[in-house]
Image 1 (cartoon, rainbow, N blue to C red):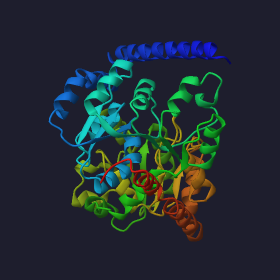
Image 2 (image 1 turned 90 degrees about the vertical axis):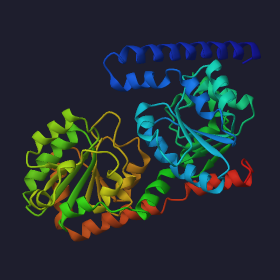
Image 3 (image 1 turned 120 degrees about the vertical axis):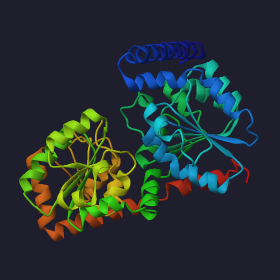
Image 4 (image 1 turned 90 degrees about the horizontal axis):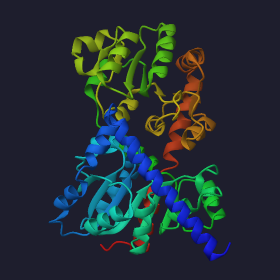
Length: 429
């Protein structure tokens, strides 16, 4: 391919990317008429540069910019952020989110210095954002690549790291039409991938600035487990009884749990459900499924002793609640997006159960192979699995030990990132 042909393809790709950005913005605008998340996406970006400039105008310290798509990516990057704050206290951390579900929950997070929505990608916006923030180092967590931001970062010769990335061969990077995506990857100074397969895939497209570091989420969940703060109300409710803790559940999960739990007919068994959505309509639906349940916000000493089903109606408890489980259940395995964070449950050394749609999540696949987790297809299979784990002590212990060994044996990705920063002197102490 000659230079002229390549330039034509590049310009055409850039044109299509601009069309994509315009259509995306239009779709969000239309959706905002009835969708609260889309409305927050728009409202959060209104006068965004004025907000950023006002907040940073008196900032005298050097800054590090960390970008996260949403809440999950924030938690993935949190151990790196915390280590940076500890080892490089002179720098201020500027965090950006693409999604409202990340920003709204973490906008007041005390562990960083500034939290903003990321302005929509464009050459002008990228230049304006970088002119205001002036980052000494940029870190993207896992994915959420934006062409104009990344190319502008490279043009300004700012070191840019991609942390905890994972790649699959069916992604656009590895297709004939993926020239723009490949260009974005080559903007990173260093890419830290979760596994060897990702590294080999990148090498096929001549992206060689890559280190296999593992997944920083292992460090996040291990740290949470090590610094566990007790939940006294949950302890009172459990009262030393065997308990199933089901987290991030959707309607299909809850229907299966209802059928299986009722079929077990065990008066000493307790169930705690922390649904993925906690708006009033869903909580009311959940109460209809489990009429004898009580909400966490309504829990009292007397009700803790007399009820056997507890519905969590707030955010922030789940990662600690799994500690109290005899068996854990992670929801999402019957949705199109797949199962939620299985590591939060497995870190405590408890068997993990989830639905059949888990194939694109390496940690879920690995946990099943290691026998620390078991997948099921319907309520009958869930019931049989629960029955075995409750009755067969040997099977229970095998799965518990396998779950804990898998998580604790894979920690350490954060230190690999920090070692790279230190050895290459990307930041001054």
